[in-house]
Length: 80
Image (tube, rainbow, N blue to C red):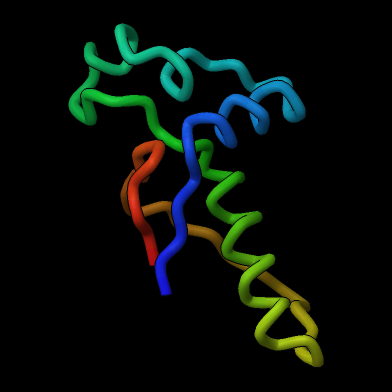
């Protein structure tokens, strides 16, 4: 099953987190970089992923977590 973080969800996350970096919100700014479109906040990807994991594994306990962002995810892009 795939996930999608929409542009609207990215805007909402930016307002809640206070991270309004234009690379996440503005296509004109994003076009100046190699990914060409606004990207999802990395921490938002992590939160969505952790939420999915915990919903499937209700009795699991996360004691330690190490995160290595190897790639980016565009708004409205499917990810697994």
